[in-house]
Length: 340
Image 1 (tube, rainbow, N blue to C red):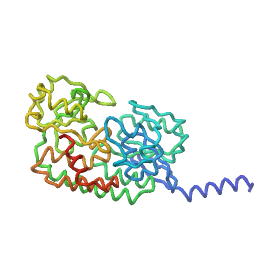
Image 2 (image 1 turned 180 degrees about the vertical axis):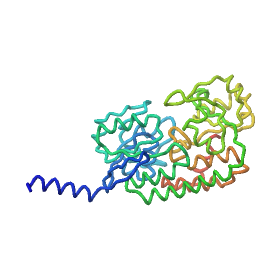
Image 3 (image 1 turned 135 degrees about the vertical axis):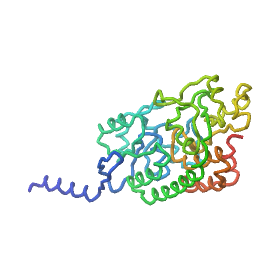
Image 4 (image 1 turned 60 degrees about the horizontal axis):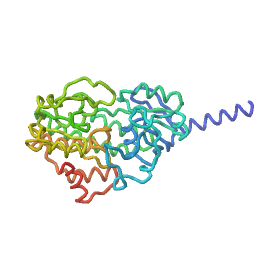
């Protein structure tokens, strides 16, 4: 046996001893290093998932940490996360990903969002690099506990993944049980600079609202990757929703003062609410682990008689567990009073 062959055998044995195999949600067997320290998420939901599992293993972001859909800052997030380089995204709206750039950061694993509308494109592109990819389900709220466990196992954070999964499952079960016999509340999701962009009723962008006992008034088939379907105010008048959920603070401020919007039932009754966005959006853009607290907030807005929990206590509990941040009373009040 030649020296070269012996060396190759030793390398093969060494890799086998220090590698593990897992089956992802596509049924694909993925070989991973036993010690995974450099991971990239191909989409914002996956990168935010990585943050709550172990931010030190992240190599970069899809977009800038702070953007119009959140309020990312050092009050809630680590300095290291906030300073991570923007490697790019497959989803437009920012810096498009360059595979050579991605490879330069030497990721050991890329987490891919299984329910992404571009998932096949994403997977095909990353396959060109020979970087291992692992599919994670994350579209539906009920998938989140499974996602925490799978991602935790994949990156060597099984204990943390299970901890988050157990807590999330408890909350999901509680919200579902509390509102399961209640009539869904008709809501409108106001996006865009004029509040007249919205989402179709089955879009993943409104998954949290639907799970929390809402019935989206806008029934349609999503026309593009980004959503943000345009409607007229006349159409919104015919919908006349019971609740309006607003994505942007400046838009919220305009809407509650706009005489035209005062004709809507939700505005007349004061059931127009601004989504909390610290440090990430609680329900959407992207749909992230923040939905664990988001569905509690929404369920209490939609069904205050059926879903009676101490949301102040729950918010503190969530931020401590998922973000390692201990909120004081004023911080919690500010978060929950976002619409004031």
